[in-house]
Length: 326
Image (cartoon, rainbow, N blue to C red; front, side, top):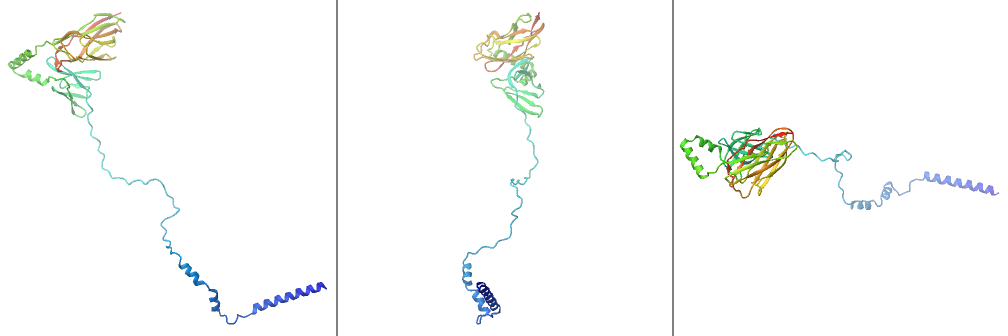
């Protein structure tokens, strides 16, 4: 009984659904409602939305693309453009400073010669002589010596400090003058000065034994006060070895310096504050004989200077000789 009722209810529900669907499909448009009205009804509220969009701030339009955003880039600094330059002009070569100084002046055979010193070497030169194959002595004046630097043919001067040189040109002019004039000048010079040339001499043993030290003294006799005496000694380095160099009585109260070159040279410089005439030892050299033979010690160059820096004439001694025996 119940099953029959349920089946009937389901059947009635299905009929109702079918009828409703048919009505919806076939139903006409509601009277009085035109398509235009429906469109207006659908657009209710549109003006209000448009007004809100009009109140928004204006935006600029997107411009044209200015570059590639993903292109490769280098962070290295940009090199400056090359600068136009003219031809490179090398600097003009100049002569180096003169490495010599004037140590004094000597007179030999009536010709004045200048003593130039460089480190431990001494050069006795006159006008026209070459020095180290690089310089030529052009002129000797009382206040300066002019050299020519041969690689550049450039003239350079060595100032004379505290020493007035006797010019070679003065001697030449004196020699070229007439005999009476030269004689009168010599007489006036002798009457004004009247000093005798200084004397230098050696004192030492004439024979020595190998291995036994011995002394050689250089003595100086001068009637004029001597303020300075730079000199250079040479010896046979194969036979003699310098052990000591010391000042004699002449410069015991002054300043005395020396330098020994093992190849056979001794450079000595001595000055005194209160010069006076004297007859005493100038210096003493102690040697050690190395081998048997005849050894020599020579005065290669010397320049005696008086209180005012004037050159004092002197007579150079002969070489000192000694025989070395076993």
